[in-house]
Image (tube, rainbow, N blue to C red; front, side, top):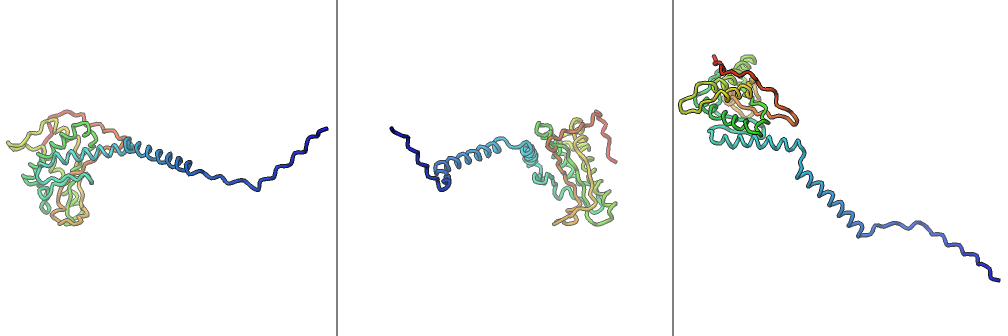
Length: 231
């Protein structure tokens, strides 16, 4: 009679065998990682963040003003600091707030350029143009503060003056836009790094743009052709 044999016990394994990723699997994983990184990079390049797109539009708007102003002598548009410098023609004598006739002509030629750009779709990003007056350290704080304000006000007064026969006449729509878009400000002192006292006594334009998700403020709704005169 046959009997079933007792099965022999299997020998115990001495330990778990280490698991090694094959070279092909490693290359596949690296390739997948590379594709993910490339896809993410392309998304960033082709679909920039809204904030970056907003800054890009502002830069293009400033560059458009800069290009349009190339025909106006003495005007420098700085699109890094968003400032407009008129050079020596917008400088003042000591304790003086009067602009030269050539400076007033330059302003009446340049400002309509800004208005034309601001009327475009992209120009709606221009929040305001601040006319900034400056003074040299000579004199007291309050005197220079008042003087710098008068220098800034002189700029707007020159825009509303009766132009020379060969100059372009500002329409009432232009004047209303200047009233709503332009502000004046004065600084008693400025750091004046690298500037002489004559260069400190000046006016500049500062371009302020809308921030991301900022909406334009309500403009002045008073419709009048009586803009008055500067004293």
